[in-house]
Amino acid sequence: MSKAVPLTVLLAILVVVGTGSTAWAAQLDARINPNSDSSPFSMHYLKTVFIEYPNGGNLFDELQGKEWTVSGSADSSNPGVQELMAKLNQKLSNDGSHAKVSDLNVSYEFLLKGRAINTSIDYKVLLEGTLSDYVITKDAQRTLVDLGWRGMTVNDEVNIDGVEINIPINLLRDKEPEVYAVFAGTEADQVLHRPIINADFILEQPLTNWHFLFDPTGINVDAGTFGLDEEIAGFVVSSWTMGESSIREGRQVERVFTADVVADQKYSVRSVQSADQANLATIGFGALDVLDGLEIAGVTPKPPEGYATTSTGDFPIMIVYGMAGMAAIAGIAFFIVSNRSLKNEKVGQQGIDPTRLVGYQTSASSGGYQTNRGEAQLKDETDYQKTRSVYDNAQQQSPPPQASSTEEAACGCAASAEMGSECDCEMHGSCLCDASCKCNAEICKEQVRSMS
Image (cartoon, rainbow, N blue to C red; front, side):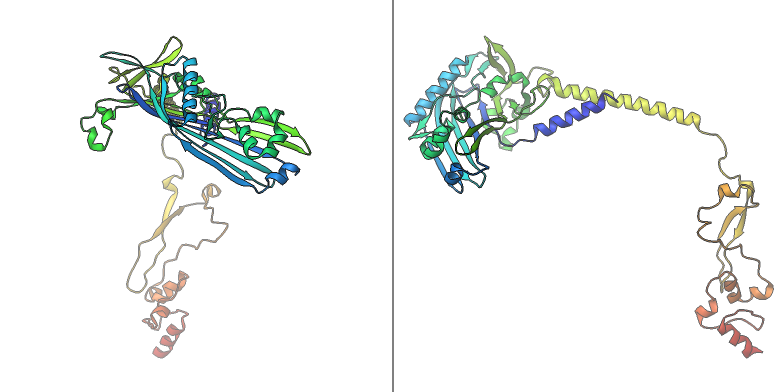
């Protein structure tokens, strides 16, 4: 038990950390078809820069209340996009990958918003294109797919239609020269020189640490009736997901870089990027491997016979076996405790001895009916304090009713009066008693006087 509590707390912390962030610095989404020469991919790059001026100053005068947006898009026919493709492919080659970006569309949006104590600049760059040359070898049984192209990073300037989209400080240079003059050549300049198009962390995270799942839906003969793509007919789909903070992947936190600048006032610059995230899928069952330092996947149309693991490293299987073991231990402990309890139980009559109880009738005739109600009380006062009702202190119990005389039995009102209840004659509005009735009800007294 002492070990289980810290483990539970640790797992709860990891769950909170893993689900706390919704904005990602670099987000990859790709579906690789090993039976095709090319496959689509998309990569989002996000970054936010804060310029803080809590004490006012020239930057406050320049930026407070200001707001503008720079956006645009271009395809592979644009010279700037072609240059970007060349730089990306050079980076992939340096990483050891044989894959290439054969087509590319670029979209970007930069938003500046000035406030009373700070100004934020949001940088968003989207790359959507086509990946090719990712198949290393292929035979009748298996296809080797290159997965080492994930680090799509460019460290140099990227100019598209006169807009530099990769180095954050260059946007200030072109749009806010007064602000740029304050930061140029300072420590803040170094913070703002970190490129936006950077996915190195996605490459540095080994695929063996990613979560692995495979979906066998495509092998169903009626898969087409569910609207599934014809490309996956007869195949399973393997997927790897990165981005969760866990024991295997490590704790992932946002990357924050700060710098202070002293000019007419003290200013702070803060660059914020959340943890990266990636979704990578391939048609077929993918088994990870390494070839000359390059991460690859051996893809087959179907999973190996008897394969039942749904996550890298048999992680769910360990959980299932662990929960089964804990349930077995809990069951054994329950039976042991129950057995001890049964042995410690007293055998025989418990509580008050029935021979010491006597029954009393608590109802009497009323009009033309008789109810059968009663209660059990002790014959004597022995050990009364141990068995008395807890309500004895709050109310006084009525004594058992005494047997009525022959005359009183003829009068329902008298019987009711002795019980302390309402008079039947009062309730019926008439008296049915004779002159022997000694009821105190006015209607009975009048009846007696009239008969005398």
